[in-house]
Length: 122
Image (cartoon, rainbow, N blue to C red; front, side, top):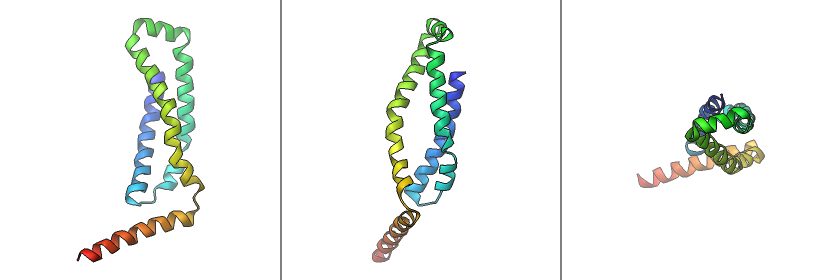
């Protein structure tokens, strides 16, 4: 069960990060969808807490005895999550505190700069 919970979390999170990168790199405004799916962060934290509970319960100890590689991979997943969770949260904080006008003006300035470069080359 813990692996299924983490699998579902990761699939949704990959979709969210694709939206986030599309917004950053292409300037498309997918932030409303990205914010709507932010509930996945809470689901991910709950899934990782469940993994902790199951891993250190009696069934987790049996799993560790029978399938040590799987138990080690599960713990590696948990460790990597908690290390990267805080790093990946930083860009979200900037988007959250930026006003809509600042976000829109940043996108417009980038488009004008790209248009200006293209005109100079012609």
